[in-house]
Image 1 (spheres, rainbow, N blue to C red):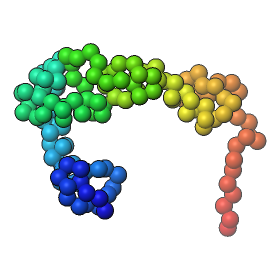
Image 2: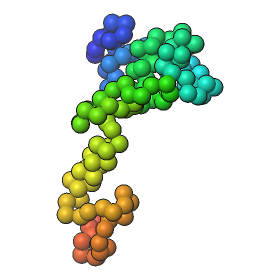
Image 3: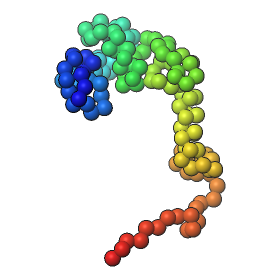
Image 4: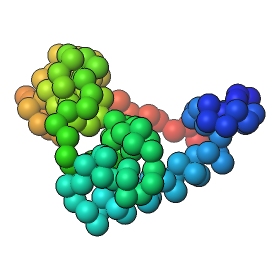
Length: 136
């Protein structure tokens, strides 16, 4: 059980810091903003906030979370890893690629990946595979 960070109401925690009632309100705001952005491509955050009557900070939060792409700005955030100015999300494209490569290397040590789907080098032999025998 936790208190909602928006309204202070007690709720059963399910991984989000806000209750279902506030989450529903947030989803309604998101759909209003998304509809406006689709109808007015290239609108700035300020224009979206004024037209939808939704606070600029909420629209900015949607952009930073990567839920929304809005034009009219160059960079609103810094990459968490390298500090480079970015316009959406948490990481820049360079750091995202590096993190993905590091994760793949941690999962499959010793193998380099040319493509995200196909490992470089020889295919695994039958001895390298694991088989599970079902008991009867």
